[in-house]
Every structure is written in structure tokens, then in C-alpha cells.
Image (cartoon, rainbow, N blue to C red):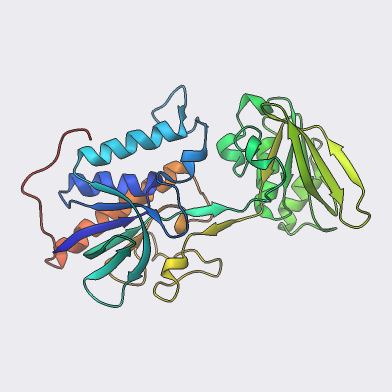
Amino acid sequence: MTENLVIIGSGPAGYTAAIYAGRAQLNPIVFEGFSAGGIPGGQLMTTTEVENFPGFAEGVQGPELMKQMRQQALRWGAQCITDDVIAVDFSQRPFVITTDEQSIKTHAVIICTGATAKRLHLPGEELFWNNGISACAICDGANPLFDNAEVAVVGGGDSAAEEALYLTKYAQKVHVLVRSDRLRASKTMQNRLLSHDRIQIHWNCEPVRVYGDQVLRKLEIQDIQSKDLTELFVSGLFYAIGHIPNTELFQGQLTLDPLGYIHTEGKSTATNIPGIWAAGDVQDHHYRQAITAAGTGCMASIEAERWLAENALLIESATMNLSLV
């Protein structure tokens, strides 16, 4: 048997794609895990308060948001499987998706494997992740922890500059920790950083340890040249050192951009292979928001349904599962 559609990965992109595909009676199969070690539900499963997703005036916990999306996908007939995808074969049709438990043939695929924020793996980092340490200022900057407090940003590129400037909306002072003696950010962003009265740049340094109780309280940084240690009393530490797209499975089969993200065509989510789409952070290194991931999941599902119909491959379900699972 050949399936209409397989969705690889979950999170806002994968579950939204599944909701739309289910409503279109495509009976989508969602593999919630993948070989890069992704967590079913994506990065929001390790996020506490989500305050910028529309429809939740008082905010919502990341795992709860993913639970609701998953239940909605199940309600419309999606089949969610926690198997990790270990191999894909896009060289033949139908496509073949292989897990450590089974192989499935499918006419269409939507890839939603996301991207993983680079971490420094400092001693104490895990304890304070989402309790002072974050990889997304836009997501977490409005946390009361940082209101009129001092925070730090690690990085010297445009992303670090954007994060630091954004944090000045909430924090009293922003420390930018740069490993070298110069910024990699664009000249415009450099000028904005250097001229801001609430941003202090620390050159030739890197964080080496974090301290606190229930939340982050203190950061220890080291001068790369002299090896001298300095303490910064900060309530927040934001990593702006890049993300790694989870695209290892698709190397050599799909076109990737220079950063390793899946290249999509124009304003669509189509990849270089007809019948395969990519949605969410696996193809977006600019916005990286739950709402934009969900939007591209919607786009991919609509594009997949139309492509299946146009190519006479669509097998509609006679019945739909409308019970919550």
C-alpha cells in the first residue's frame, strides 16, 4: 500500500501540516521523531511560557501548545508515530521512508525536522535552560525575569546584534560577549550596538560557567588572551551563535543552501523534487518562530494536496476519525 502523505517531524510545522492534510482526507502519517534526535513536538517541548502565539491571551506552556496541536491533528485523522526516521529514498517513486521498525511508501512528503540551536554546554547550563538561559530573545525576552535586569548575549554577528537590541526593550543593561576583537555584524548593526547607551560590549571573552538557585543569577566569563576570570551578575544569558538545521537525512538528495537548510522555491515550500515540501525551521533561518513554522506547515499541506490531485495520485478517505485520541 502507498500512502498519500508522510510528514517527517512534528512541532508547529508538522502538526499544522497534519491538521490541514487530515481535514483534506489525506490520512497523513506523522513520524514525530527523526534520526537527528528530535523530540516529538519539537523545540517548544523544552520551552516554558509561550506568550506570542496568537489565541492565548495569557500565554501557554510550550508542551501544552504542542499537546493541543497534536490532539487536533489526531482528531482530523492523522496517524502520529513516534518512530525515528533513519533513512529516506527520494530517487524512486513512490518515495520510501524507513524507520527502525518499518518502511513506508508514499506519494508525497513534507519535511518538518526543524533546526537545533547551538549551545555552549557550560557547567550548569541544563539547570538554567528556560530559567534564565535561552537561544531566542524574541521568544523569551519579555519574561519578567529580565524586566529592568542585566542580561548577556553571546555572539558577534547580525543575530547577536538583533538579539541585544531587542532585549533593550526589557533589560536595564545588555552585555554582549564577543570572542574576538571585532564584530561580524553588518556595519549598520555595529553602529547601532556601539552607540546604544544600555549595551556594553566585552571583547575577547567567552562564558565559562553559570551560577544561580532556581534561576540564573551569575555568569563567569574568561578573557581569551589573559585567561582572567570576571563575574557578571545577570538574570539572562542568550545564545546567538547559530542553529544547525536537521537535514543530515536529506544530504545528497535535496538541494540545501550554504548553511545546510533545505532550499525551497520562491514563495512556496516546494523543494527541488516534485512531491516533496519543507516547512518550519528546517527551511527558515531568518524568522524561526512557532507561528511562521505553523504557517509554512499550512502552505506545504495545501501544496501537497493540490499536487496529489493534479497528478491523479490522491486517494481520499471514505471515513474520517473525528474522536479525540
